[in-house]
Amino acid sequence: MTEALITTATNDEHLPGIPSSSYSIGSDIEVVDSNSWLTQYTDLFYNDGEDYWEPPINPEGLAQLAHANAYHGSMLIARGNYVAGRFKSGGNIRRRHMAQFCRDYFQFGQGALLKLRNRAGGVMGYYPLPAMFMRKRKNGDFWLLEREDQKRLYKAKDVIWLPQYDPKQQVYGLPDYVGGMQSSLLNKDATLFRRRYYKNGAHMGFIFYATDPNLSAEDEEMMKSKIASSKGVGNFRSMFVNIPNGKEKGIQLIPVGDIATKDEFERIKNITAQDVLVSHRFPPGKGGIVPTNAAGFGDIEKVSREYARDEVIPVCELIMDEVNNDPEIAPYRDLHLRFDLALPGDGVATA
Image 1 (cartoon, rainbow, N blue to C red):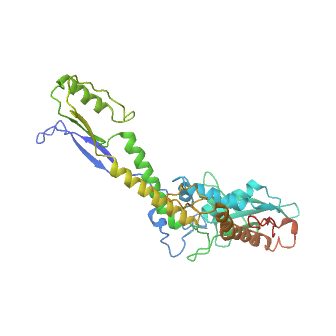
Image 2 (image 1 turned 90 degrees about the horizontal axis):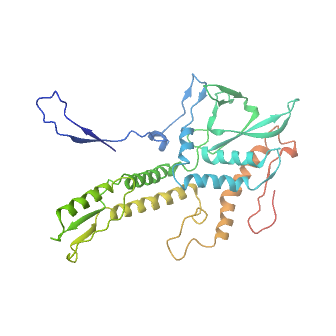
Image 3 (image 1 turned 135 degrees about the vertical axis):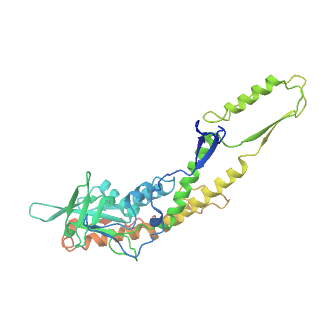
């Protein structure tokens, strides 16, 4: 919200020239539009001018959402690292490129690997394509959006496309955390509001209550000036007051402005953090959440083992199944991707 000072025009003879304030709601643009928050679509729109299907959710918004708060982006990185960390070998692909592919899969709901070919046309390895800029055509081919409205064409046979399942459409993937997008944005909004709250110093933090008759008019004006100057950057400064022969409790500070706001801020932050964790199905102990009860979050080793069993290994198997069973890849074992599928503590890999 923005405050603007309004004064009467000098040539207005009917209104006194008394300044007043007006307030307007800020026009900050959300990183994801309101329709996309709840994925209100029945089918996808085909952009005939650009010759591709429009994604159900703006990928640029999903990219910005990763920086909305401390939890969401961190969990995207962690989920990608857990899967990429189990990659062993195959496909002449480097680990950091596998990490890029895994990050795209979780953040945008889809990942793309380009088949690198030799001069004879045979596949010799893989390279990740940025999922944020991939667009699919009606014939199954892909456009890679580039700068200055340029596009690069990739044939469907040259791209291994792994989307997360969306029951509403099967062109693009849909990230599994969409149910927590509102909470992620609310967490960001609460933090930004709190920062502005302290930075502008416009809140009423206390009542300065003085009843001592020994307080001179000069001292009173000085204290008023000091209190007024504490607003804005550099607020919360200390002030020394000395009144000779003054009365006990002649000057009191009565806090009024921060208690309810602080409680509401903490409640919003805690609730939205839990929502983000749930949307990622991420254990709180692995997400850096500080337990608020004596029981804590249990044995982290057991939690890690179950998380690997239920969330990490299944994605590793999905990637292996999609790549290794490609008709061009299946006959060549050296192009097969291999991940460590052993649970923590087993010590024996199953792939």
